[in-house]
Image (cartoon, rainbow, N blue to C red; front, side):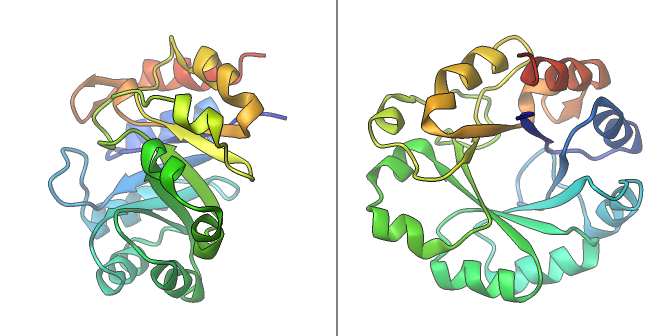
Amino acid sequence: MSTWVKICGLSTPETVDAAVTAGADAVGFVFAPGSPRTVDPATARALVARVPEGVETVGVFRGQGVAAVLELARASGVSTVQLHGDETPADVAAVRAAGFRVIRAVSASRYADEAEEVRVAFGEDALLLDAVDPGAGAVFDAAPLLSSPPSRPWLLAGGLTPSNVAGLLGSLRTSGAVGVDVSSGVEASRGVKDVALIADFVAAARTP
């Protein structure tokens, strides 16, 4: 099965085109305040318009409240909402009811502490396990996760680069990792994506 790949934190036509050309399954646009990758809805809508059918467009939010999330998601035209924060199962259900797919992003350490009934209650479309500080480029400690792996396929994020993604993904395959999400690992400088690194990352993630 081919590795699912998302390139996140895109903000220019050139980098969106590079991700699509490289074969990414999804592209992400950050709406969380305070990030060097944050875009406004109008910019995101113009970028979404460049994305062909079959490539998922994801709006990334962190602790912004459901009303604000839905307003920004609708204004930008994304198909999927990625939630980082303290959202509840009811929040996830509300976003899904509004017609969006939901990726629930949570730190690997926090997820390892969740009881199975809590994990199941969220009902998200996809689960993404990240480092404690999303977007900081730090690799999370996989040991707790391997001792209590998800009962479903999941996506890996946190400190991934073209040089380490194949190895990290390979070591976590047995725990159900089926895809990867990268942002800082394909940047020439903080917040500035590099088209060559994007291509290298997608190729490396799909190395047999």
